[in-house]
Image (tube, rainbow, N blue to C red; front, side, top):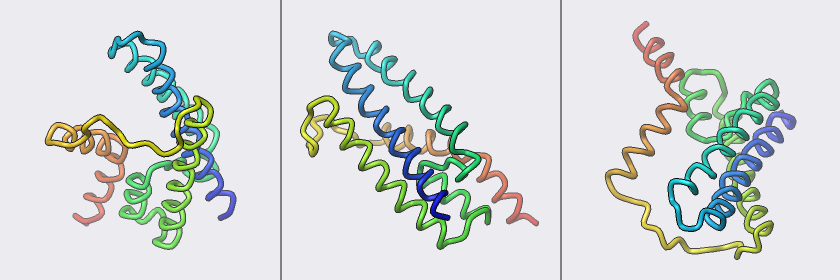
Length: 147
């Protein structure tokens, strides 16, 4: 179990370090072009997610997200005890990854966002993105409920 938890920590660490780090770098280099900044953030994010899933998937299942772990829990592929441990290590990995990205780019470790990230459109996009991550498990869960 220690190997699995370390894999979840490490994968979430790298994922968040790349998401935040590429976001900072893209913002600095894009010259105010939001489309270019978004592209400069999206490509590295997709690439590191692919690499982390390939490397760590065989070890821990490569959840890297509490919503994915919850979907595994709902489909009885992970116990409550293990899912709680996964989620704790994912949160710790994410926090560590963000701190490291901020240090790498000489940013304050703790910051207050100046961008409003709430509203119906934000919640819809979060729902769609999360559903995309866990849809295969939700389908399996519905099938189990109907049996």
